[in-house]
Amino acid sequence: MSKRTFTDEQVTDLSHNPYVQNVSPKAITYSDEFKVHFLAEWKKGKTARQIFMEASLPVEVLGERRIHTAANRWKKAYQESGITGVRDQRKGASGRPRLTELSTEEQLRRAKQENVLLRQENELLKKIDFAERRGNELSKQERFALIQQVTSRPGSLSVRRACLILEVSNSGYYAHFSPENQCKRQEKEEEDQRWRDRVLEAMAYKRVAKGSRAIVMYFLNTKKTVVNRKKVQRIMRKYGLQCPIRRANPYRKIAKATQEHRTVPNRLQRQFDQSAPKKVLLTDITYLRGKDGFLGYLSTILDGATKEVLAYAVADRITLDIALDTVKDLVAKHGEDLPAQALLHSDQGSHYTSPIFQKLVQKNGLTQSMSHRGNCWDNAPQESYFGHLKDEIPYEECHSLKELQSVIINYMDYYNHERGQWKLKKLTPVSYRDQLLKQVA
Image (tube, rainbow, N blue to C red):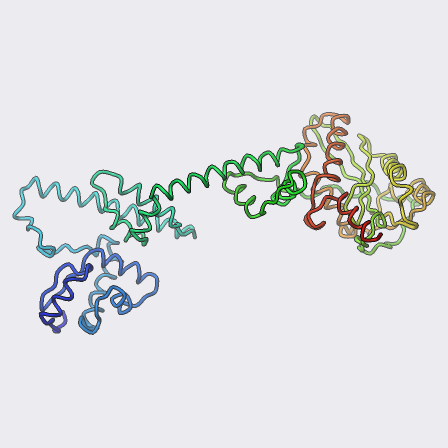
């Protein structure tokens, strides 16, 4: 112990500090609350001198040696025995009756109560340690709930002691459980539940799976309601609402071109968006595996600028007809609106290298373009479209071509007229096309 002594005036001043349990001209005893507080601040990286100063314990009066001796003693006790190791176990240190003055029954009762409190302290510390080892820090709300759980038991820790251990303020704890704040939290929870129902409604709309972006654009375009995407993401996380993860597209080239089939150059060179509707047309075929062995095929033609599906065909066999029918559907719906020498871009599949297909394309004034062999990026928007479609429609539930056609017809209408897209300024393909046409006019 340091030889430094305190004057009567210093003893009086120190005794008024709530962190001082007992003080005399030659010695000072700190409260258990201060020891717990000291260790909590020390773990944050503060020095012993800084912690004492912030607790209004004057370093110039106590002396550096006394401070560091106490600090080292508490650190060692904590490392060896945890928080219980720093509690004052000396006889008479708190001014309470000596154990020898108490009856055996009273000593036993106190020992049991002490064990209960120690177990509760360890319970709090274990939960903090478990959260830290997982890389998660308990939020203030979680700490307040933990304090309420522990202190509500008979003969439990005091709120003040629990707050010190969990490093939160008494006032913050009582404010958290005030009737006013509890009412606000209840209102927020009810509001979240209402939004959960609205998000579920959006996710179920037309039986098309949707992620947070699609839900935001559903509210914007269908409900005329602006909602922040982060709010939608928070609601989805809170209630475990998940959008199916997109699977890799297993579609590969269907067949190799025969000698009579002819490839053409890549005239597009990935210039998909040329700011003019129907100038760049992207086409491809994908398969859709349903139930009980049913296998369907979808062929589409996509507008490179607006991402609108201009034509499509559905079949249960992958013959040349599916590609021919798609071009015929394009001409029937948009033939008069197609610009001269519009590019029809595809991969090098046997359908597109077929002389019959190429003759039909030329007959209708289209210029053919093909991706480099084995390079899906040369037709990326079309690949992306098929990925979204497979995420969003229940094709796996279809047993027949008729069922698949019904699902596809429903989705095409939804996709073109109601499904906003982030890259189209949150507009639908049809709305974005109309906007482009107005700019040209």
